[in-house]
Amino acid sequence: MYELEGTVKLIDDTQTFGSGFKKREFVVTSDEKFPQDVKFECTKEKIELLDKVRTGDRVKVSFNIRGNEYKGRYYVNLQAWRIEHGGGEVDSNLADVTDSSSGEGNLDDLEESPF
Image (cartoon, rainbow, N blue to C red; front, side, top):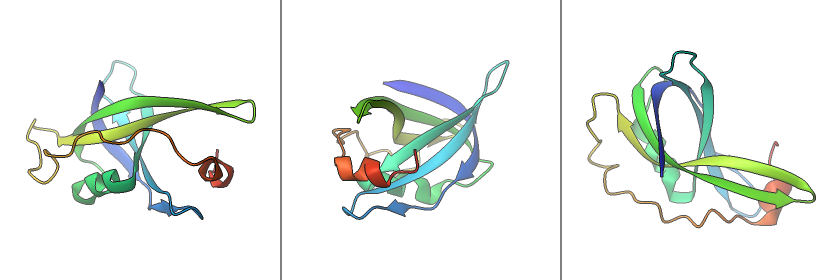
């Protein structure tokens, strides 16, 4: 499990692929000496995590690193499975969400992905 604290910079709309797979991406600017913009994604039921988050919110994101190879190219995704608001308080609707995703997607999803 990995965590990153920062400020939400961007929240994209939900993307739906031909296979029915859904994902939503968002960017957090990290709290470091040299801040970085880090892109995360929520997939399937985890998309609901972003319903209560707004641009400018201070958050702590718990995430897993997922990597895969497709047609000789390698991809890395940071899959968020929990988002806490800045003051350490967890939204009561989000606290019960655990990581149940396998991290494996349909190869058709990659073909339609904007990578």
